[in-house]
Amino acid sequence: MTANRTRSADETAILQVLKGVYDAWDAHDADAFVADYTEDACAILPGSYRPSREDVRRSMAAGFDGFLKGSTTDNKVLSIRFLDEDVALVVSESKVVFPGESEVPADRAAIATWVLTRRAGRWLLASYQNSPAVVTAS
Image (cartoon, rainbow, N blue to C red; front, top):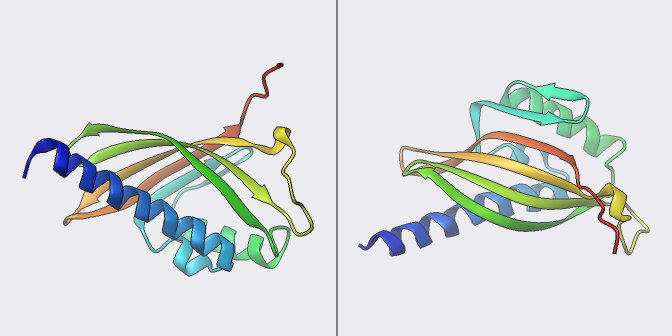
């Protein structure tokens, strides 16, 4: 298999991992949300640090039962960069869509970084961080 074919297969697998996370959010399923996280994965969001997969799961379960109830996400992968054969950095733009919204205000957009690692042939999420996206003037 050529390097480009392998890279393409890796990108496809990584996009499937992210799709699984997005689909789990839309289904409000905290267990499925972290299914492709490493045990020691961490998540950093404005004002919070979740140092393990279980902490992320617990936080998402509480969110899905609370302030995120009925929400979905609108996501766009901006780039995938391989740091080595088994580590990839993904940059994405994400927006949380709350019930009744047809459009998300620009000031609620976030830019996220995802670090994925291949373990035993499977791509897993090792780290996630997001911050508010900068709204530029037209």
